[in-house]
Image 1 (cartoon, rainbow, N blue to C red):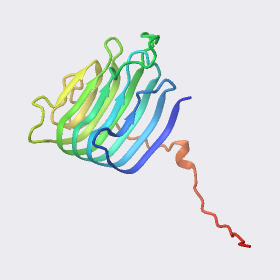
Image 2: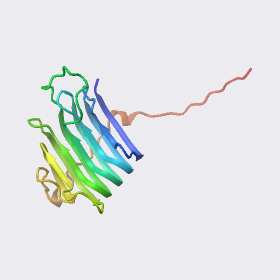
Image 3: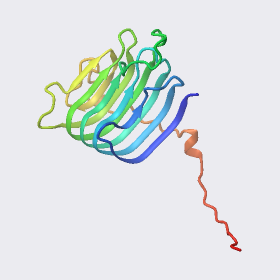
Image 4: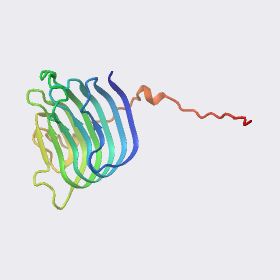
Amino acid sequence: MPTKQLVIRRLTCISPYSAAIALGSEMSGGIQDVRAEDITAVHTESGVRIKTARGRGGFVKDIFVRRMSLHTMKWVFWMTGNYKQHADNHYDPNALPVIQGINYRDIVANNVSMAARLEGIEGDPFTQICIANVTIGMAAKAKKVPWTCTDVEGITSGVSPRPCDLLPDQGQKKITACDFPAEPLSIDRVLLKTCTYRVNHM
């Protein structure tokens, strides 16, 4: 069964050994239509992490993240298609995951060791990645190359430091790229109500 229409809002996170938001690695049912906004993370290994590997199958699609404030972390963005060994020794190596439609915008981060580590799968690249209006302040002992990218495809706009060549900057005219969807998800229409009841004590 897929994970769909997941909403994450107004989250404050401290997670030194993991991510503020992590999708995968178990995702054989698929993950789709995730919207995360107004996230604050402090002393967190990564801001957003997507992890998978050959043999996992499934998909991660239509992910939208905006308005993140990140302080002191190893990576802002981390995607990997080489996450650990498969739990089943008889897994099908041809069961390749689909990672596409990953959108990040309006993010400010400081004291960061590395802006991004983006590693797709050879022959099965992660596609339709869009990153816009992102400012990353590097730590004093940051990596010399702030971005590493392999087997990924996408665009960027208004991102600092300069992204890798696989995510070419489209310039300020494309700052509206990666727009957060305006239409609500079905889960947004759920109304929570309070109720009262009386207990008669004998």
